[in-house]
Length: 322
Image 1 (cartoon, rainbow, N blue to C red):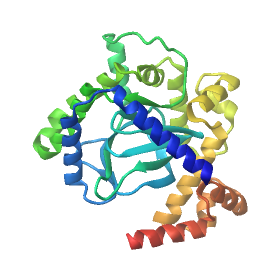
Image 2 (cartoon, one colour):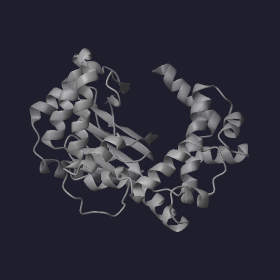
Image 3 (cartoon, rainbow, N blue to C red):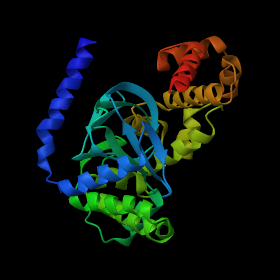
Image 4 (cartoon, rainbow, N blue to C red):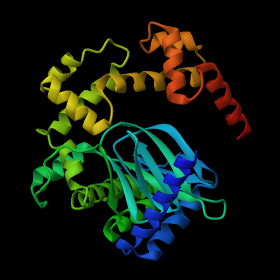
C-alpha cells in the first residue's frame, strides 16, 4: 500500500537521521557481526549453548509477520528491523535496541537486509528475578518516571552494553567456560540496562509492588489458562487491582484488552497445534477454548490473513521449499 511504503520510508529516514546520536566502537560491531555470521549461515532464528541467548539472520527485507515477543533485549549488529505493537512502530538498528518487558503480541518487519549484508543480531531473554535483585541492592540511581507505560521501548546501544554482549557471544567458542562465565556476563547486562535510558520501563515490571509487576503476573496466568472462560473481574482481583485500574494498565502495557489478549493466545496456540501436531481446524479450535468453529475461522482469518486450512497449507509448502 502506498501509505505503508511511505511510512516505512519515513521510519528508515528516521533511523538514518538519529543513528549518529550514539558513537559506538565500529570494531565491536564488526566483531559481533563476524561472530554471528560465522555461526548463522542461513536465514532463521537459532538457539545457542548459552541459556536465553539466540541469534538471527535475515537476507532480505520482509513485510510484518505475526509473532510473540517475550521479555527480552534485541540487538541488531548489521541491518535494521522494526517491531509493530498495537499499531505503533519500534524501529531499531545498530545504534538502538528493542527492549520488551512483557509477553507482547506483535508483528516483526525487516527493513534493511541483503544476501551480501544480511540483517543479523541477537536476542536475550530478560530475567525479572535478576532485575529485582539488582533493584533491591539499592546501588542504582533512582528512577524519576514512576508511571506505567508501554511494555516495549527503544533504547540507545551504549559501548558498555555492546562490550558485554560481545564477550557473551565470544563464550560460544569456549563451551567449557559457559556455565561459569555466562551467568556473570548476563547479570552485568541486566545491570547495564538498569543504568540505561530504559530503567523506568524495566523497574515498573521487576519491582514487586508495582502495577506493572501485577499485570505481568496476570499475563503469566493467562498464558497457562487461555482455554478457560475469562472473567476480567476475577483476573483483576487476582492482580489485587480494581477492574477499571486493571483494564487501563493492561491495555497501556500490551495495547490490548485482557479479552483480546486471550483471543490472541488462543489463535496462536491453535495455529501451532495445526502446524506441528496436525490437528484439523475444528479440533484445534475446541482445544483452545472456542465453542464455534465458524467464529474461530473468522477470527483466525482476521489475525493471520487467511482461513486456517489455507494458511497452514501455505506454511507447509514454504517449509518444503526452504
